[in-house]
Structure formats: C-alpha cells, structure tokens
Length: 79
Image 1 (cartoon, rainbow, N blue to C red):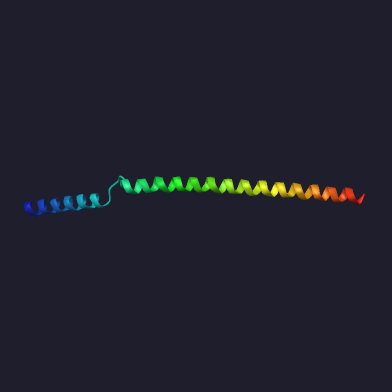
Image 2: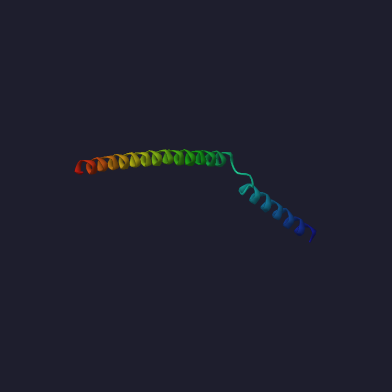
C-alpha cells in the first residue's frame, strides 16, 4: 500500500512537472521580440497614415481655396 501511494505521488509530481514545462508562465524571448516588433510596426503604420491624411486634408483645403478664389473672380467679372 505504501509503495502504491508513493508511485501515485511520483506520477502526479512527474505529470505536474511536465505540464509546467509545456506551459511556462513567462513568455518566450522570440514571442516577446515578435510582439515588440509588431507594436513598433503598428505605431509606424499609424504615423504614416496620419501623414497621408494630413497631406490629403491640406490638398483638399488648398483646392477648395483655389476654387473659392476662382469663383470670386468669376463673380467679380460678371458685375
């Protein structure tokens, strides 16, 4: 009976140890490096999109201003 209990305890300990090695609590270095790389990529992509949006907004404002000036000139010529 004593040997049976020892065998069960040993098996349980081995199972727990193997499970703990399979699912560690700390992330692997590659995974952490990949996550950091991905976050940097997201930040760079967001900055590039913001620059693109700002350039498009500036172009829209300048074309609207040109259109308004042309419209104003056309109105002045009609008078």
